[in-house]
Length: 235
Image (cartoon, rainbow, N blue to C red):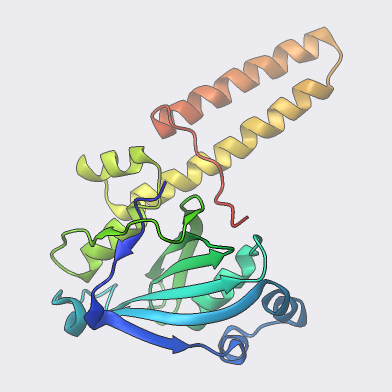
């Protein structure tokens, strides 16, 4: 999946290096988390600031700006806690572009203000493209009426094709994200049941586990429309 690499407006270019110490400070980073930054992250660059003045799109209550951060990695692995720390530190929706060894991938979680406390953010699980060559062509930004609509489209571009079809069918972004997360949870459940089945030797217990597995697979197919989804990997 490379459809999520976008040609961001030149007017939105920001290009500032973000010191890791700034992230530590605002994310309340533990020693273990700091070690992850040191061993896995080479540099963080605030690449683009998508705002009303740089996109000609109006802000919404939930999305006043969208930030695009570039992370150059020291290896092919980036722990999700690194991304979560940056999301905690930056009070705006974020799109990450990871780069390593001549390749790049886009990653983001759906991020929204908490209904209970608008000063806090609710962050979903992460969605990601596959790794692609760094010179992969970028596509124009999705057409949107405002920054909220643009953000919805940027997040949907990181999801399986069925999510885009659901968007066209009128499923709102929060419902779409919830369904994608349910797919991931059900996929993990299917994998656990398959593991139990592989270990079980008694015939009658295998019959029961097989029935459980069929039910879980049917629910997964219902959720995903035939397109099961695995958890995002940053490797």
